[in-house]
Length: 71
Image (cartoon, rainbow, N blue to C red; front, side, top):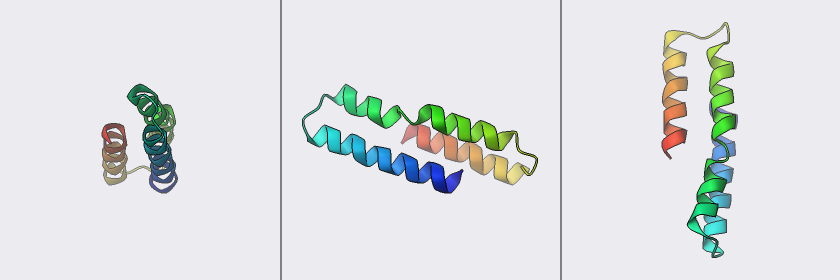
């Protein structure tokens, strides 16, 4: 979740910045940037339901979801 999700978010952020630098409206860049939110929630929910989850890994996953949602 941390590796793949973070790489996907980073790539989409660069695409959103590229779209913005090409003169697109800010709303288009924001929509591109936020397009990964359903995928992030899916990754978090899939991890949360896993049998190997501990309290520490659950807290890290929750922190990650909050971080990628805000950034």
